[in-house]
Amino acid sequence: MPIGAATAAAGAITDLAIVLFAAKVGDEVFKRLHQPALIGEILAGLIVGPAVFGLVEPGEVLDVFAELGVVFILFWVGLETRLDEMREVGRPAALTGLAGVVLPFAGGFGLALALGESTETAIFLGAALSATSVGITSAVLDDLGALGTRAARTILGAAVIDDILALILVAVAVGIATEGGVDALSIAVTVGLAFGFVAFVSLGGERLIRARPGILEAPKFSESPLLPAVILCFALAAIAGEIGLAAVIGAFIAGLIVAETKDRHPIEEEVVPLYAFFAPFFFASIGIDLDLEALADAAGLLALVTVVAIATKLAGAWFGARGLTPSEASIVAVGMVPRGEVGIIVAGIGATAGVIDAEMFGAIVGMSILTTLLVPPLLRRLTGPS
Image 1 (tube, rainbow, N blue to C red):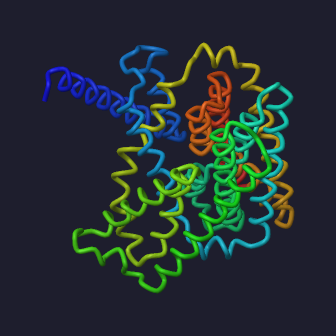
Image 2 (cartoon, rainbow, N blue to C red; image 1 turned 90 degrees about the horizontal axis):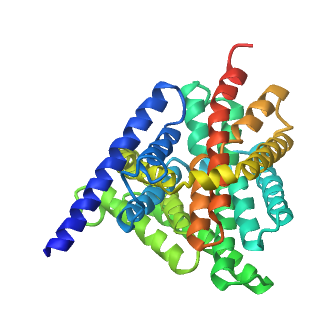
């Protein structure tokens, strides 16, 4: 290996080691503070990045690890979701999910247009506000021992619906940004591809798995079903990207399909180390890429985006859950507020597509952090002894 290449490789490995160590320290600190670990990982990236100490600079290698982190995050979310459980959620969850997308999307889209942003940027902001972090909410409810309640099941079902619809909205936005303009045909084609890909792969994959539940054990080149599962994840992510959708849609669907196999639980156990290793690179990279000057300049925008994000999600979720008791509806409304990793993923995709500038990126990331920090103490209060 040439000396220059060896030096570059050593530098990349050093950066990865610094990022992973810092992210894990941030993870542990925030766990001890009873706050979402991903916030600690983002702040760790901010500290080691150019904004503070400058120990690590953004680079291609870090971007690859961060992209793998996104893929495994959405694969894990899909793996933790069952298609039959989604069907059994019922009317409140469906209404909550739909209203929890429509109102936030309209609020974000309208806010962006009112601020003079492009239609593409408005769609991305609407999509970021539409999402709900099922990972954050489920972790909090699990910690509170409330996952078995009707309100919790409604939240989780609605959050899954939110995430699917938000990912489709992102696919529409990516398609529009790629085409370089907005027209009805482009939107129709993108929406058709999104729904067609999700429906065909999800339903077809489910039927195949139900017919052959041990299919992941069939390949003779692997001693574990994890390798075929990861290959499926990468393959569907790649196909989704090739047809103009966000790659994370493919990863999420792969998780849904694998969740239907008889090897689901062994795969969950084996995926945990991959998730624990790669996901911190994604969250830390958000902090590394965060421009504090742009965030300070975007203080007013951050306040506007956060207020709209909270108000529209609360209103939409409350409307959808109005068939439950008032206390349950309150829990559902608050539980739908955190955007967490999903909002940050949308912001990252928008920035990569070139339709989210540094100021808007900082505002969306800041909103995702604030809404994620706000919910755990409120849910503890709402689900505690009356």
